[in-house]
Image 1 (cartoon, rainbow, N blue to C red):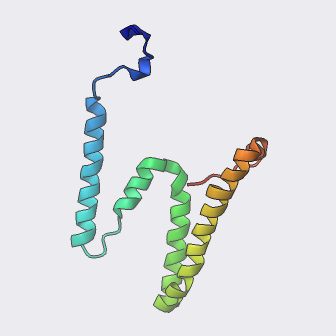
Image 2 (cartoon, rainbow, N blue to C red):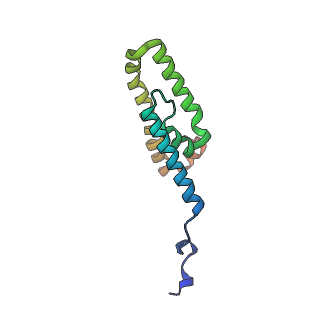
Length: 124
């Protein structure tokens, strides 16, 4: 088989300098955020939030705001006892979303492809 018989996708290409620099910049920002969370008491930004925002962009701002607002109201008016009582509800809510949107809807889509096109459930 001649070298030209291989598909283009198998041929090697040079690494992208721009992508490498972007990845290193992202790692640097994550490290700085991690250090700030560790050494500055009450630092509001979390490294996981940065990673999620870079991955999903505008899709997660509204859900993050709702969760922040719910937590703020619970802690302000119910204190730590209500916060600890609310944790199982919110974990169940997240795991239920994972089970329905991630697992069950994926199985439905595997067997009945047309059903998932009419009613789309977004996971993530």
